[in-house]
Length: 102
Image (cartoon, rainbow, N blue to C red):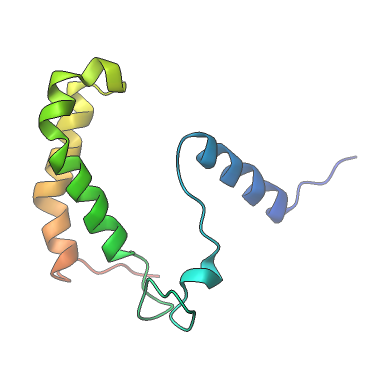
């Protein structure tokens, strides 16, 4: 009988995400006490600089996406959802009006 371990599931999920174009970063490499920290505290869930960069790319490519949405595999519902997140939730996250509970 084969046993499924947490690490096997994690490795599988990482592989799937990398194949989908996501970048894997080992957590200790971005920890507050590392040489390249991307969060101020271990409790920080959102990596704000990465989020701001992603929103910038979305905003910058908005016109291109609308013109070539079929080429990018996006549909108008996905575009509207991203725009809604950008315009409503993101400002609240950035201003700390939304709290993430652990």
